[in-house]
Length: 442
Image (cartoon, rainbow, N blue to C red; front, side, top):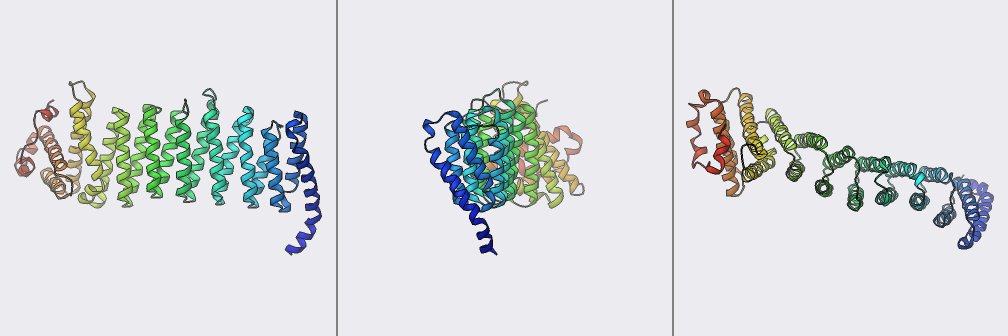
């Protein structure tokens, strides 16, 4: 059957070969041609390629595509080139002609760099082709699509808002597809190229689109347990913070979604991934210096810990959210160090830590059939002492528990009066000196 098909096609292939050879001969003199002559030969090359797509003569078509690229680089242009080029790429995808697809993709670069009017359509085409190429496991083709989009990203004018936003949207779609096909290497390669491209830009896309992109790449890496992918995400987060491109609304949205992801990952018992995400989140909050986002993060993470305790018990919740508790120790000391007066934001952050941890203790007390809060405080202290944390960390944790217990006692004087003596081990020695005592003042 294959042999019969080959015999049927052989006259057509011979004719195609002759036509392309003739066009190739003419095209060798491109440097001396007029623009009209270039356009004519380029158009005829496209016609020949298009007509020969179903003949399965890939080497011949590759030669024609490369020659067409040279013609475009020398100025040949017609409005219908883009439509035909996309058709060639799609047919190459369907027929699994990878070399032809690769050569066709490369033609987008000179076209998009030279012709502003087709950039928007071209970026969308490349995004679609990249996603389809990933689905077909043509990883190199997909990476080349992303690379051309990012080359264009560097030269787009700030005023071209729709194009800037479309570029990021296509990159978001591509990163989503890398996760679906479970290719961490492609994910990391494209994300690293994306970061490098944005680092070289004067302007950045809209804050809401950047936040959507961040959440997409963060979820993809976490959901696939891609540790190297998370490292690259961290670099992207650091760039976002350095450039100060996210507004307050989007920072709060990011924190909200980030903590939801941490909760999902923790429920799967992927502690290494969850710990990495907690550390990254804390770094994001600390460097962003956004008080509202920080307070939101503390409250929401406490809620996640309480929910985990309701499912699996306080001991497991302590282990799962250990890194978050370490972050609170750092945040508390940082707030105390920065404190200047009662109107200072750092006071609100530090006191919020005590209030929220007090709420955690009360919640866990109720979960344990009204187990006394003093018992929860003592158990929390024991869990800290049982960790392999350095001694200075255990001292800081003990101080935080002392502050929280005192805060609870001040707000519940009648309830706590007979229970405070049962927590004597927590207060041996008393670590609340003048640097921290102001946190307990009204």
